[in-house]
Image 1 (cartoon, rainbow, N blue to C red):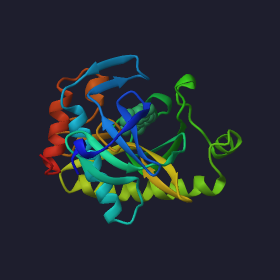
Image 2 (cartoon, protein in one colour):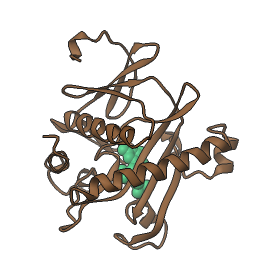
Image 3 (cartoon, protein in one colour):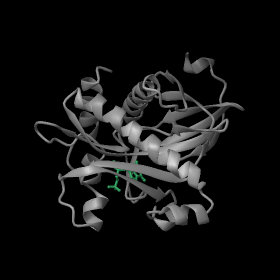
Image 4 (cartoon, helix red, strand yellow):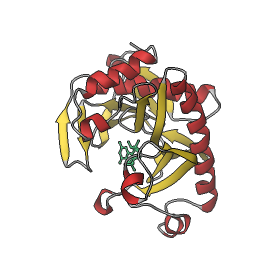
Length: 239
Ligand code: 5GP
């Protein structure tokens, strides 16, 4: 499909790096912008080509999930930086899965950065900028009315399945999937993986060199972040 053939209304919502436009009552158009932020918007920049690379990588990973039996909001990639998706009701929980210790896990607990975890950690954070995305447990999530016990159980199952699929995708191209964050939405009575899956929302390390290929390059001022996202897209044979 051509972006010029889509009648978009809105935006319904404009976040830190994406804008969501209404297409019809059942579909939205997601625009991946070149904006990059870190620390809840404290650090900001614009990196040309980021929107394109993230739309491309996200679309590819959603397709992989679908091929492996995980339902997602993905409908179609639209050049250069758009994705057509089902309109879902996002559950405001950041579902994080970790295979290797890094980031906030090492700041909050005595894990050594780079330590391979005995088993994956599934973590639920409340998606709430005002409260700085605090970690949830099932009772807090339930009492805040974010999700039912049954949904939380299903979200954990989805998260672990997504982890197995993505770990293999990256393993095959010489990259370690350190951790990632997904968002899950309600669609016609089912839970589907929504939002984006890109180097903005994952930690990816080169298996051999341990080179960082994700947004930590921007968060920690480690150099050319777009160059690293291009490495990921190239390894996945997308560019
Ligand atoms: P951490 O809790 O260590 O900061 O993040 C764990 C993983 O989830 C990382 O891959 C990180 O990119 C992702 N993640 C967690 N919270 C957010 C968030 O608010 N925004 C984005 N883009 N990624 C997040």
